[in-house]
Image 1 (cartoon, rainbow, N blue to C red):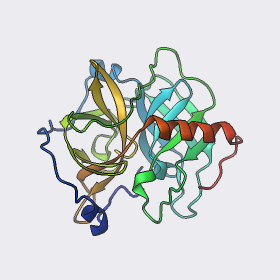
Image 2: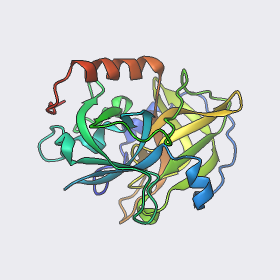
Image 3: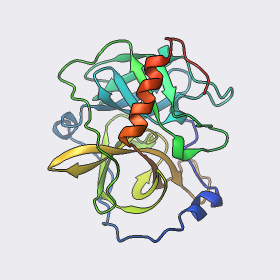
Image 4: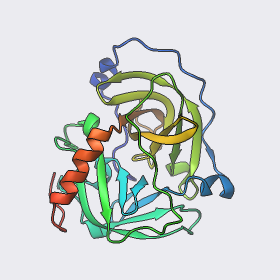
Amino acid sequence: MIPVRFIVGAASLVLLMVCAMVASAAAVERRMTSPTEQAAWNAVGRLNVTGHGYCTGTLIAPDTVLTAAHCLVNRRTGRLVDPTAVHFLPGYRVGTYAAHGTGMRIVVMPGYDRERQTVHRDLALVQLDAAMPAAINPARLHVGVRTDMPFTLLSYGLDRSQILSAQRDCGFEARVGPLIRTTCEGLPGVSGAPLYQMVDGAPVLVAVASSIIARAKVPIPKGRVLAVEVSLDAIDRLRRQLADQPTEARSP
């Protein structure tokens, strides 16, 4: 979200990455997609939050969007934003989009705390007030990250906020539980972006961009993406929370 935190400069997080690094592929530079390329990823869109900025989000069911939890938490109060302030625009491109969905319910992963930087729990679901058109195909999910396969990161970074960018062949570097360090490039706006891997010849969503490792505070910080693994168990847990929650947002 812009201007929300997308920086993890804390040495403690870097020091957590003490497991052995594995060889990773050289990432292709992040670049804007063509209209044809973007159409193939029409489940990915901008997630605009009125009064707070935007993130990237991904449709995983006709009426459900996956993103990062910190995108949906008010920085001043620590409470969830009003769901009706959340607007999902799949296929967003220079002011045009395939559809428009408004939030109805929001849930974040239990234990997520923005102030404590519980990055490993930085996942959230937004239930929309109506299903997206059938032409928008929800992303396929998988059991989780495969450490021997490259990622494709799809995002609306601050430097390219109007057109979906793709970075292919980012590599896995290390993990601590569900927190994955990658060679993908991140900056504000990439929060909530999906990381895909190819499984059986088809792209599946395996992680969500949460933060970056940046050593210095600069106007537009850039660094390697820390992502949260999207396990089927985590999604099931979030979906159960949605089913149990009334329309009004609750604080995390």
